[in-house]
Structures are given as structure tokens and as C-alpha cells.
Image (cartoon, rainbow, N blue to C red; front, top):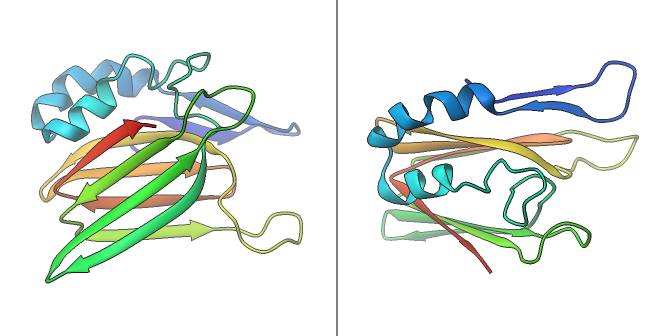
Length: 151
């Protein structure tokens, strides 16, 4: 990620998470973001670690990729954890240009993504890029726009 920092703690379990640089440049970036991406990134609870609508600790429950005559849509259902969130998050990307996922093995188990740590939405020539960092991997989507709804 360009502005958001997600770094494993040395000799400890957990991560150092810092969205402050991103939050400082977001007002300048938001004018170049498509409407849905701008609304999602600017949600006041997006990076509020104590908030019910903070993305931290959600888990990817389901991903659906559909090619409808050249118009590719992608939908993520991010499930809540029981101790923090009141609901899950659905992110639907329109006119997807690229989608990449990197998953790692964890303690000898099969590759997995794990819990969401933080994400970053940036302007892109195709519309927007959305990078999501998990404990054991990451996802990067480039699309025309996205719509995020808490369900």
C-alpha cells in the first residue's frame, strides 16, 4: 500500500497498523475517486478501530466474479467477527480490469487470507484501485468503481 502502513510486530503477535498518512491525503485524493469509492474511503468509521463499521478484523466469506458479455463484476462478502461488528460488509466492483490475490501458508496449513487488517482505496486511470491487507495475504482490485454496503 502507498499510504496505509500494515507491518507485523517484531517478536510479537499482531501488527502495527497506521492509516494516518492516508487519512491526511484522502481529502485531496477523494476528488479523483469515483463516487462509490470516495464514499467508502471517507466513511468516518472506516478506520475507527473501535467502531462497528471499521473494516479491521472482517474476514472474506465469499467472492463472486461474473463476466457478463465483457462487463466483469466482482463481489466480496466480508463476514463480521462476533466480538466487534454488528454486520458484514458487501463490496461490489463494477467493470473490473484486474483482480489479484496473494495467500500464504500459515503454520503449515493451507494458504488462506485470514483477518482483514486495513485497506486503501486510490484513484486509478481505470477508476479506482482497492488494496486489502489480511493477516496471511492480500487482494488488489482495479475497477471503474465500487459500492460498499454494510448488511
